[in-house]
Image 1 (cartoon, rainbow, N blue to C red):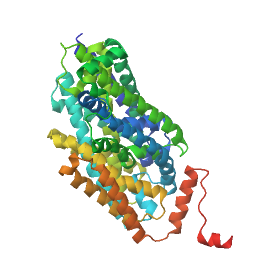
Image 2 (cartoon, one colour; image 1 turned 30 degrees about the vertical axis):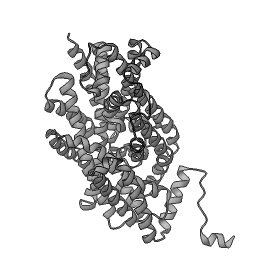
Image 3 (cartoon, helix red, strand yellow; image 1 turned 90 degrees about the vertical axis):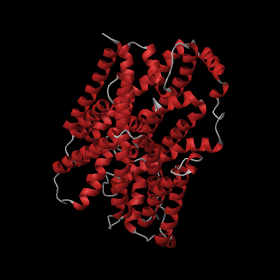
Image 4 (cartoon, rainbow, N blue to C red; image 1 turned 60 degrees about the horizontal axis):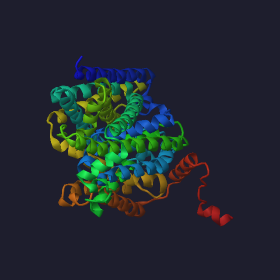
Length: 505
């Protein structure tokens, strides 16, 4: 058999495994809570690996190694910022969000949580946040489909359309029927595959380059500055890269994993597993790029036309074709895990946050699940139509969408969990401000100087506080739920005494 045949066998086995997991999840899905949130039954390890896999996408195996291959360790600040941001997200958002979404009318989406948390009877808050999610994620899913098409085009010589349809079709199949549980369980398998690949490739490559000392010597021969975390970068450049971590708290497809855990206390174990996975995989991606520099310097007869394929080319050069096929499957896993998570969140925005407002109020659980599946299908079709245009600006929107979600949702998620005086108008003004600042800043020359999430997040946070203070009205029900959620998340939490209670003491 040819090398490509071995690789295709590995890819087919991987895709079949994903469909099988989706079928298993389909058998476990009974109602909308199951379909959208897996009945809040995720174990810490499952939630952690799922959050990591749905977060990293192909960036971890392609984008990050490619950037470091070209510019050196200065590009690692993005990974550093993301790791710190993820740790803070698990530490401060995960337990409180898990408890608060259950206490506040068992909210199963971020928009429904905002509405229930703030007792918004106008439905405006739910609609606006649902629309923001739907619009951004349609383009986000589209970018993943484009990446899938390019993957098959470059790896197997297929056409872009065939590759895109394969990735979209398989991902849609297990997400459509398996729902959140299907997306989550496949994320776990994909996360493990990514971890193994990012450990195996640099270790085997390091052996091929002659060990640590020989590898470092080869890199220094190219350019000593490639091993520096600061050389070639400005202060604002480092801040921009590290600021990617700010976006975590506002990413719906990541924080929904926190809502699906069994208990708030599971967040502690989830944090250790998730951050451990993230550190190992990020170090593996960085090591792959650096060792790749040494490998191709030592083997000048080999050429690397596209730096972003350093991970792929090393695996195809150093491993048996079947193993190389499994490594290719890890890249595919990174792409598909993100698409599936975003499809589910988009579907929830359509059904839970928009349809339930204007549709039948007495729809049965089976009808709602079917509508959820229809939502997945509609978003996938819309994203596929956009992807077929192969417009490069779609991929550029990934960075914009991360900043947009981080600025629009990040501050209000934090304030909703830790500040009683957040108001409906403060939340609406904050979300709009964050999205608008990110859009204007990111499409101006200023975007080349400082990543738009920094001013977007700051402006959104400031507006949320100022407008909330101006429009806040005391609400005993909100106060009671706030304290109940805090006590459930942190058993040692003690609610502050009211003024009347202090006077009687």
